[in-house]
Amino acid sequence: MDDVAAGEEHVKAALRASYKKQKEAFVSNLNGGTLWEINNVTLVAPVTVLLWSILQSRQSFFHPYTPAAAVVDFMLNCVAILYATTVLSSSQATLNIFILFLLLLIIPTLTSSNKVSKKVTQYAKPPKAATTQLDSETSVTELNKDPLPIKAFVTAYRGTMMVITCVAILAVDFKVFPRRFAKTENWGTSLMDLGVGSFVFSAGVVAARPILKQHLQGRSQGLLARLKTAARHALPLFVLGLIRLYSVKGLDYAEHVTEYGVHWNFFFTLSFVPPFIALFDSAFKWLPSYSVLALILSAMYELALDLTDLKKFILTGPRTTLFSQNREGIFSFFGYLAIFLAGQGAGMYVLPHAPATSMANLKQDVILRKLATWTCMWCALFYLATDYTIGLNLQVSRRLANLPYVLWTAAFNTGQLGLFYSVEALSFRSTVNNGTKNKSKNETDQRDEKERAEFATSRLLRAFNRNGLAVFLIANLLTGLVNLTVPTLKVGDQMAMLVLMGYLAVLAGVAFELDRRGISIKL
Image (tube, rainbow, N blue to C red; front, side):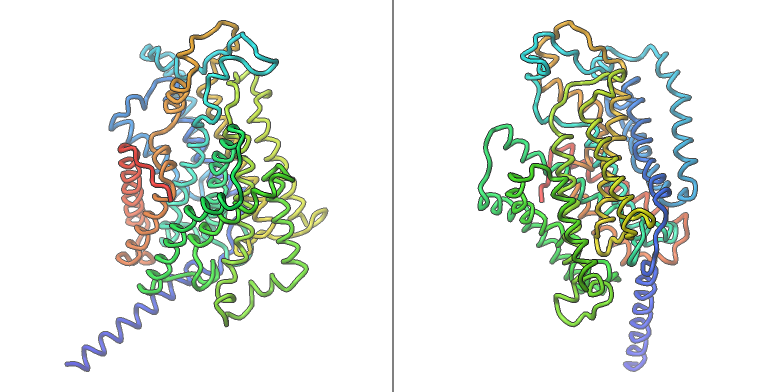
């Protein structure tokens, strides 16, 4: 009997090892897809936010936030993204066109409705500028406002990015998720490659807030104080990296070694960003542009890749030491640091308060003009880096986090910010009139501005954004749980979609509850 039991255990162990190899092969040696397709599938996010915004600005559909409103919110900002990246992945353009067509059908109905309250109109219109000028650009009205207000379009951008990221990290283990969207092996572009960089870029955007506060207060921290603050942010992330490392090794979980290395993981990369950013803040005194710093850092890293044996070492070197075993994570960090700096650069002009602009004067909008300028600059640099006729003929590599990868990530995310900003302007500023009547202080104080931002923000996306890193951690835990209990490679498309829908519903529920209780988990 003991021999029979031992034999059965041996067979089970062999089957587990075989299935583990199948799962590793399922996400290995992939080449990605086209930039056009990636742009198409991610366009569903601003398109659905546009539909949400029109419903809110014209009909106050999500105010008050009823169960029906919550379901519609979930369908628009979670389910649509899920379907765009899975069963409708070959028809992204059709899906976007359908949503826009639906929008065109319902706009006349919403416009002619008599149910629109005065409160909707009040929140949909930013206050008119006061006429008492302190100088050619600043009014008394503008001074009453928060210099660093909550921006609805930034919340929408970060919230949808988090939803796409959470969808992808579990969906990639099912066959319903196209292989061209999974992370590439060495070269190429894919949705998940972009997702990793976008996560870092979006973190950089909001990291500009404390720096802007210091500038407004006319003070600055010394290097030791900055490093101490950075250590408080880095330590929890490093601990999470250790927990993930030991859990993956202990559970014999399938892993893709060439992604970050044998022991390294994304939490380690995130944990090293704050200390290095604290050091780079010193360089900001001599070169006051985080975007330029990002470009210089990524260009120097690319020179090291091309002019030395570093690229060969990362891609083909033996794994004989702890350093060489984790070479992907160690050296790609410089690329992710550049991406974070590029995000900070965007945050420096996106987060500060700017006067409300009507659609008629949108060309003069300071934020939109800067977003458009930097998007064009990043795109032009990406073209010069990758074009084989007049450029450097470099290829994008997430594994290396090289210069083209940094430029692509920065161009995409700056463009996305521009799209979400335009959606907000179209939906909540379309009736703005640059009149000359004075408004009462109550309409221009910070409380009123906060209420307007809340009215223009999806509760679901706000919840995902508010505790983004905590939600990302929970998504990783749920992904591990599903993979340990469900044979994902053997599951059909219908069952996979049910699992993914339930997974998203759990994440949304947790995010909602944390937001409802006013809990913000800062790691």
